[in-house]
Length: 112
Image 1 (cartoon, one colour):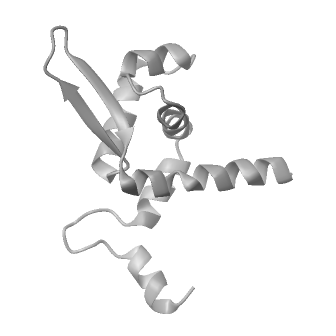
Image 2 (tube, rainbow, N blue to C red):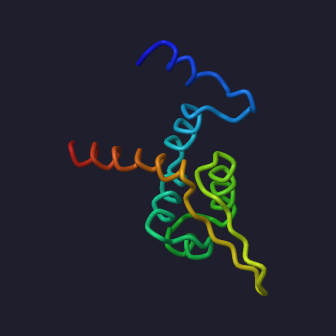
């Protein structure tokens, strides 16, 4: 990796968005974040369904992880004006590229 590329990973961008390196570190350091990304990627995009699909994942933690993913620009929250309210999460363009990291991790796990 070139020095300029390395510097750009460690600096915050001008609009105070976290760097990709920070996002990777935060995401890979949290077991629930990885699981939430896997669920969204498989098509489970409603919070209730995510909580039911993952034993041990509380609603509080799920909401925190989803908020982080939205703030990082990995997923977007889609709220439908219905009664009762319906919310879904989907990967952004950046998120689709970002989850390729999951493929690499899964490949490494199989390599071991």
